[in-house]
Structure formats: C-alpha cells, structure tokens
Image (cartoon, rainbow, N blue to C red; front, side):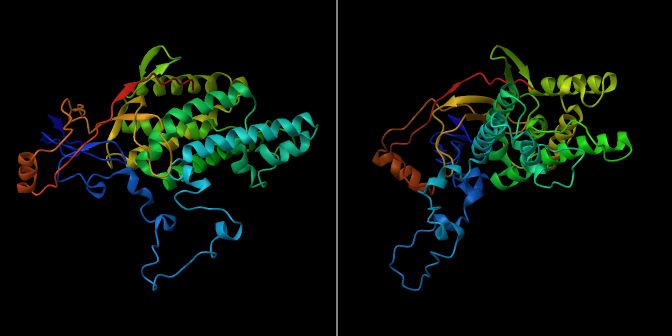
Length: 357
C-alpha cells in the first residue's frame, strides 16, 4: 500500500504523476492539486497547439524574436531542451565562456579578456562584468568544482522554485556576491584603487544554491568525494566556519579566493530558502535512475522526495496493477475515479552525489 505524497493518505491503487514522478491519491492526482513542478510552464505560448479546426484562432507566427530569426521555440524545437532545464543551460554557458576565455588569453588579448569577463574594483562601472564574471572562471579546477555543485544541487532548487525564480537567484546572487567583494575592496582602499585583483566565477551562485537547500532540507545526504556521507547542514556550517576563519586571519582575498563573495552568496541563499520554505515537498537524497521527463527536457538527476519533518517519506509501492478487471473498474467508478490500466511505477537507484565547496 502506497502513501500519497501530498496528504499522506494510504492508497491501494495510487496515481503516479508523469511530470514529477510522485505518488498521489485520487484527490491530489492532478498536477494543479499537488504543486507539480510541471506547472511552471503551463502558460508557455509555444505549447499551445492550433489544430486549424477553429478559424477564429489567430496566427501569431512571425511576431516573436524566434520567428524573425527562424528559430523554432515550440515544444519540439531545439530550445525545448532548456525549458525547465535552466541549470543545464547555465552550465553550458559557463563552459562556453571558459573556452572563449582561453581563446582570448592564448591569442594574447589579455586586456580584452579583463574588460569582458573580470569584475574589477578599478572599473565597477563596467556593468556587463557584473554578470559575465559569474560565468567566467580562473582555471579548470575552479570551473570543475562549481560545475559539480551546480549540476547536483541546481536542478533540485530549480524544480522547487521554478525556472524563472532560479534564473533570478543564480544571476542575482552571483552578481551581488561579486559586487560585495569589490565594494569592500574599495572601502578598504578609501576609494577606487588603481590596481586590485578582480572577481570571477560562479562560486557565489553555487553557494546560494547550497544555502537554499540547507534551509529546505538540512539533512540532505551529500557524498563528499564520492565516499563520505555528510548531512548538508554540517557541510554548510563547516564551510562557513572555515571561510570566516580565513577572512579574520588573512583577509577577504585569502588564498587568492574571493572569500567574502562566497559568504555573501551563501547568505543570499539562506535568506531566499527561508522565504520559499514550506511551499512544496523537499528532497532527502540525490539519485540517478528512471526519473520521468521534466517539462521540456530529457531525464535529469532524479530525486527522492519527502514531505515535512512531521510526515514520513514516501515508500515505493510494492503492488503494480498491470490490468484492470471488470470488478476493479466498477469499484473505481463507484469511488469517482477512472479505471486505470497498465500503470507504471518508476524505480530509482540511489547514487552518491559529490560536492567540493
């Protein structure tokens, strides 16, 4: 017997949402009744299908930016993959930016590289660097660590808050973290310095993502270096303590790292996590496996979901009805439910989720 993820009711024949993979009772089987992440893009005009039956339907083709440039932005177009998958779009942008950085540096355009990608205390008026610096990185190890954090944790936060809010969180926290670092450098120097180290990297945004998850589910298990299981709250607390120690003993740029930017990003994430806490169910571990397709994209790292701390996690059903009998169909109709045939229950296999802040 399965338990409804929304209300906790025991169900002999549960419904499984094809968008989020959750198990629900008849009352909460519809996506709008259990806060399904698949509803984030319900009003996407690209998902509206015009059959041509009603001539009164207006044809808006050719009016959008995608139509002007011949780009198919509909459900099956090349951009459909990124609908609901902003996390992966940002990861792709990070690596493309890193490639362009190296092209410029190898070609000897160091000054141009600094102007385009580095947020510097000497030129805070270069507004574009507030955001380009978030995607630029100082080396392979730098971008690799940030990519791991964003890959494993970013999609969880995006599913929880929605793609639009995740975009604002990522860009906003990354930009504010960098501006906070250079702003403090300006205050330390009593004005804009002629020369001071700049800031680049998505560490502020990555730590904001970790901050959100720390508030939503502090007991989320993270496998550090693929081996050691550590609860997220302990990982976040330990990293915060170490960063504060570095700032106090060495300075905000200790070890060539923007330590203050890291703390600011984490603080933004903690505050935003508190703001959105309790809106939906939260994950209790990371998984890879047979997760369902999300809105507009292929399979992503799957999640095991739980309700609040006052409610036990969902237990997978051990009974999978493969064919409805006349008796079962009559029983479901009597309860006001449609008969169900060939219901599929996905199985998920746990995977260790690494992180290295």
